[in-house]
Amino acid sequence: MVKISYQYTDEEALNIIQTSILTFTKAIHPNLVALTDGANISVDASAGNFFTVTLAGDRTLDNPTNLGVGYYTFIVTQDGTGARTLAYGNDYRFPGSVEPVLSTSANAVDTITFISDGTVLHLDNVVQDLKA
Image (cartoon, rainbow, N blue to C red):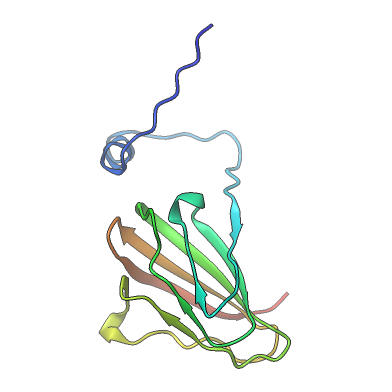
């Protein structure tokens, strides 16, 4: 048996999704990619669609590399001090150009979801101060 692997372009994948009915018989478990905290937080979008980071200071989420078409979600946690801010690179787009404000309490967890057209990320949703 010969196994063949093929990497679809974003356009090909989008065409397949738009013209096909996909049926999943089991849950899909995407990777949760841990980002490295630092003054500038790098994002390699080819690593996954779900990212997590704990902020230990005021940070900037850099423009992603290898951006594709789809949804990207960031799970952002405040450290034990809290009141950390997050700025965004210029490829992130927000309604009225107003960036979301994160929850400020210590250990607060927010999720920020974007829709990407493969070039820029448009804010889709923000859920603030998730509690266990």
